[in-house]
Image (tube, rainbow, N blue to C red):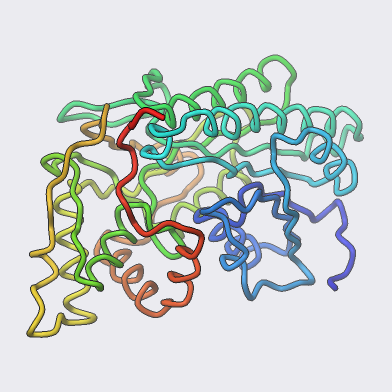
Length: 361
């Protein structure tokens, strides 16, 4: 048992057992003296395996749903954290096509419940506590919709979500802004580009490609594979989140991007190159790159995303530290070294099958 948590140095991270969340918890424990309480529902993509090895004197996991108002209110009244970072979300576009209701419940209703609990916490505290408190909501570039061949999303880009997932995140973003403007809640909002790195559930493109290639399985590429994404190594994203939490201006939003655009097809090629460099394919097996297979495109698939992160760079001094080549190399090496994690992540019934087919129930 760790020593009791104290309000003055406690941060609450929702969704902290997921991909970005667990990496962010590690950033907090490494870069700050704070203690961290994680609230996570522990659905298929959030697992205690992502939090193995953390210091019990500075870390606690609470299994709870952020849409459970009673539990959240009691927890915040007990902990009185000086900041809440909301990373709890249903995140996969394909799953949102097959079942949008869960995305509305967690991403919209859950964010609303969390905002209400935070508002009560601030109202019940001292003036000093209220001035110190921060509510950081972590969102996505997908709320902006699809770009043409040029330009990039900035903080003033109008919202135009294309999928149930991005619509649910857009709704949450609007609630966060409204709670600052209406109630004065000291909120911060970030919109990031596509993350990749350690501990990402294998339904996403990067881990799916790595694991399928290692087993000689098909590497599915939606449509022509020329959809463009800006790729951000997860540790760089987490450093950006900490920067915003520490130095961001309440009520403002900050875009966090990797400045590394490439098509999905190019990304799969680069992953195959990294795999070949680290673990060359057996001579009696087809090369990794030959496993690529174009499949039917995702409904409503946005063609291009790109993030203009000049504001956070100019105002707060953050910049991504990893090139795409460096980040992919570290990511491939992590998955090769963590086979047990990969097997455990898929132990609850997901075998890397195609999602997002929008089949009628």
